[in-house]
Length: 243
Image (cartoon, rainbow, N blue to C red; front, side, top):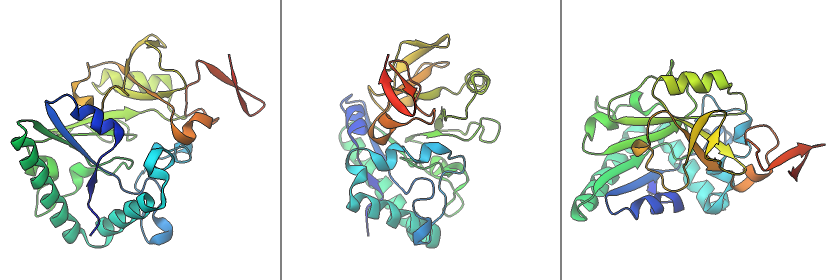
């Protein structure tokens, strides 16, 4: 069976803190798994599914990585009992490793998906309830009113090309920070403070009421949909030019 948890460059950067030990799961983003009998794992995906980091950057573009994502997604859909058994097995191992290193275990189940894990239960409990000693966190495009806060589950709202400034303010007012992809990460945008979200992946430690700035990577660097906020470049006749 393909392991459910894996690592990434950003997760590795977080683990350099020597305080937390993070892990992450990559399943098939948006509709990637549908041709193989899967499902749309990102209910609020928009044009962002084209430049999605989960399939267009680093090792995620390789064929083995794609096959592993699809395999995890199909297992989750078609044999949830086996999936749950494996997930708990790997989570137990991760927690043991963290304790051995005298660190706090943390994990992201939505590495590049947007599944409502607070509603997914194995033997009556979701992962946040079953493992209260672990820090759970994710990014989400679900609006705050449709995905309110859940105990032991830190969420950061992800802006898309369809997100309005009013919706960003609504999320911030509700206590949920907002991730924005830029061509150049600023320190301030539209009057809001911007922090560097690429420095690490420990979003639960971010101050409340800020924009989490992420630099465009992979296919997103060529995005012209509006998903990437362009401060150093602009779109002219469908092409990206420097300012």
